[in-house]
Image 1 (cartoon, rainbow, N blue to C red):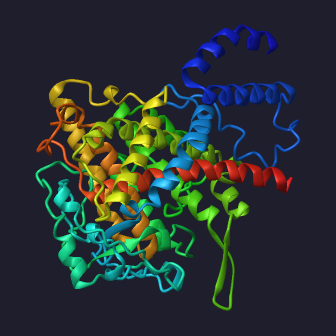
Image 2 (cartoon, one colour; image 1 turned 45 degrees about the vertical axis):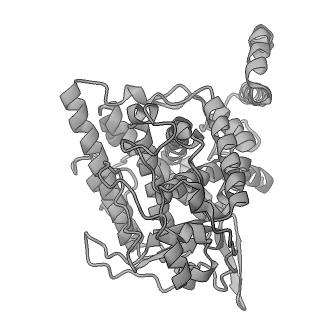
Image 3 (cartoon, one colour; image 1 turned 90 degrees about the horizontal axis):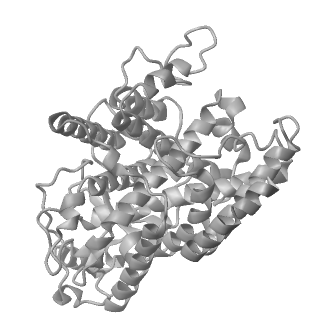
Length: 491
């Protein structure tokens, strides 16, 4: 191993000159990992093998791309996570307009959660920044920035409450943001933001966490997503599906993965995106678990046992590692979309309008700095490998891909827990927006410098979902580092 380290020294120096501390930390972790693996030739020899099973195979290069997990860990935890946290705390990104009252379009919805932590209390209309309430998501002129009356949203009293009420004055201000080109091919079923059922939610006061929503209702949602929208025939059984009766014998899921590997790249990617999103949500629930409750005050924190049940290979027949790797794959997809959409926001006339000029300038500066970091990542996913076959077949497959994902966004209206529905809709829309960006390369390259584009446009709702959705993925990877430390301490 030492010989390998010495031989790679020249390359390390060159990479350091290009990429700085990122490479040094990455190289250190790779050497440390190799030393550990050489020292303990089998899992049983390792001193913390029992408590580190969730991570012992979470290493190396991901399938369908040329990036390794260790590089993503270092890049995210040192470069991206601190910046995305600051960004999503800004007024422009903390308020999300959503309709949580849309009926489930697929089955009779009788599963609304009555647990208080499921509930969302809308943000009072009078507390929303007037520039956001104006509603004109495509207006970038200085006139649109005339009003600087910014008032912070008050702390919601109940856990899980969503703050959504708005004053008449605020509604008039929001009308200034209401225009958007609806002729585009969306990957998501967008909420009608002008609907009286749509409310503004302060995402900082309504964090994603475990609410107690589980059981048949929750599984019916995920089962519908996997079984009916992931290009899977019913004759192929998904591993560990609790809604399918046991088949007898020792089903280790290899039949499913043999089928999956036989699919074209695009359909494999689709499944891995959905699995990655599911994994990310599960990590959030494990990291913000209701540990204790009493006398009006609840204690939230990481639940190591819950994490093990969802991701330990011994508890999941090997599924846990695959789930976590799919999270990293999803992270790469959205990271690539963010790096590609940067020119859209680079244009001088594009403002992240809240009504406060100083706030808007600071937010855009942070956003552009964040985009610079995403563009500096050296191992991006190559989306050009997708839909690259015969023109007619590729177009048909792309449309099928889009419609399947759009259907999943509609299933989010079937989630019975209001807070789970809120974050499910936001993260699904965030991924849908990322896909829209990845497959709009030509339109983004041809953006006019001094005026809005008819070929490619983003609503404020899409922008907020895109950044917050990626923020959730970044948080998941950061939380994996925390769970790794907790498991080691538990030993």
